[in-house]
Structures are given as structure tokens and as C-alpha cells.
Amino acid sequence: MESNYQPPHQYYNQQSPQQQQQPRTTQIAKVATAVTGGGSLLILSGLILAGTIIGLTIVTPLFVIFSPVLVPAMITAALLSLGFLAAGGFGVAAITMLTWLYRYVTGKHPPGADQLDTARHKLLNRAREIKDYGQQQISGGASYASS
Image (spheres, rainbow, N blue to C red):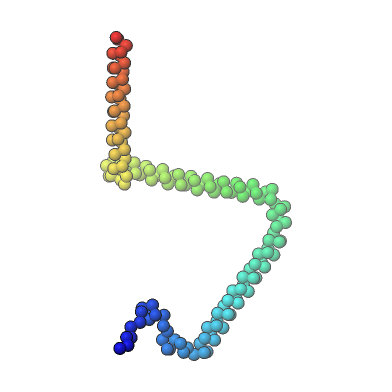
């Protein structure tokens, strides 16, 4: 008794008879399109490379002549841009912080308020423990001084 079962990986990898017998003209058209597109892109790439090399050859002496002006100008432009970006970033951070603080103070419970309250309670408890310890040490030291 023969079984017609084929494992799934074999079933999906098989091509239908229609796909195996594609017309030869379709295959030739696909190859011609691929060769034409690839060749065109290769030629375009070569032209761009040649243009870049010619442009650099022409512009390089200008860069050398004007470098005492261009380099400080570029450094100044970079510093100005970084300064404006940093100022904008810090401004956004400040507005965000002030908005969060306003919501916290007005009781609107912003994200992270629970963590802040927990940290505040821990800090207060620790400060109270240190205060009590200091008072015990002072009162204990006074008894030693009086004896």
C-alpha cells in the first residue's frame, strides 16, 4: 500500500507544471529587463563617480585658498547650531519639569509621584533616626561629662 503523504517542506518547494513550463519568450524578457536595468544603473553610478571626482578636482584648490576663512566659519556655525539645539532641549526639559511640578502640587498625581512620595518618606524617617541618635549621643555625653 503506497502512501501519497508528502512532508510540508517538500510540498511547498514543488513548482506546479505551469510554472515549470514558462514560455521561453517570458524568460528572455525577464533577463533582458534585468540586464537593461542593471546596466543603466551601473552606467549612472559610473557617471556620478566621475562627476564627483571632477568636482573635487576643481573645488580642492578653492578649499585650500579659502580654508583660513572656511574652517573658522564652519566651527562658528557648528557651535551656534549646537548652542541653539542645547538651549531648545533644556527649554523643553524645563517646561516639562515645571508642568510635572504644577500637576504634583495641585494634586493631579502625575507619573512618578508615588516614587517621589516614597523617597520623601524614607528620607524623613532616616533624618528622624539620625536626629534621635544625635540627641541620645549628646545626652549620653553630658552624663559622662558631669561624672
